[in-house]
Structures are given as C-alpha cells and as structure tokens.
Image (cartoon, rainbow, N blue to C red; front, side, top):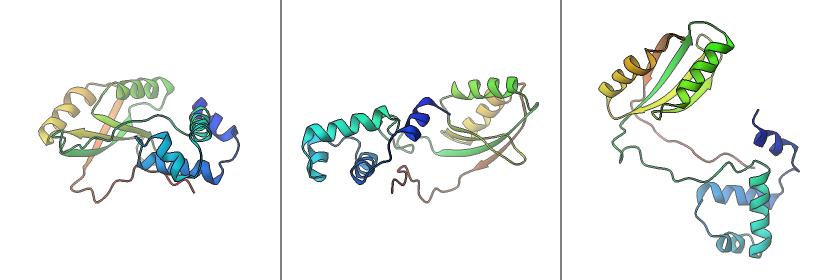
Length: 164
C-alpha cells in the first residue's frame, strides 16, 4: 500500500465539505479556489486550507487533463490477460517494471483466476497492437501467455470516484 493510501486511511474522517470539495474537483479540476469557495459558502483561505489538507492526506493524487483518445488517433483499446511463466517475485517485479515503461499500457492490475495480470492498452489500429504484442510483450521471457480482448465500443467511461 502506498504511503498516501495509508495517510488517507489514518487521517480524520471526511466531513461533508471535504466530500463536496472532492466531488467538485473531480469534475472541474481547473476551478479556481475563489469559485470553489463561493459554491461551498466559504471564504478562500479556509477552502484552500482544506484542499491542501486533502492533498497532504493522500485523498488527492494530482491534477491532469483528460485527453480525447480518438483525437489523438488512438482508436483501439485492448484488454490483455497475461499469465506469467513463473509465479515468483522476480518475474512479477520484472513484468511490472517493464509495463510501467510502456506508454501504450494505461493500466496494469494483478488479478485472480486463470491469469496473473490485466492490462489496458491503447493503439492507433490493430496492426500497431499486433506489432506491440510481438515486439514488446512477446519479447519478455517472464510472459507465458497473452489473451487479448478488443473493445468494439465503449458505452461510457467514468473517471469520478464516488465520494459519498
């Protein structure tokens, strides 16, 4: 568990204003402190203090822009189920390190069942994904098998976590 996760669990329980701040920031990350404070019927300084505390306690990991994959010509999303050739710390560490270096891999999760990992991968097209599998994933000796599932259509994607 990351230290930020531990801090968040050890920190005081969130009150309704903290939860509302998190809810608004998730949807409108570029909102000004003044506008946020106004919506919460607070003055700027206490609002900013709450935001800083939420950041320090690990509730807020950071801020970023959500990019449109289609605009960047990233038209293919694939979920790849990975089975390692050996169930060992050495192979897991090697695999996780390698995946963290590949910008096409958006998510890497340890899973239960018949596979060890689930990857979310983006590519411009299926040919590019095939090359990625053969040249990048296929070259790793720690991988025993790869099963891919191509997303035909994403009906929705939620980026906000429930805070209530």
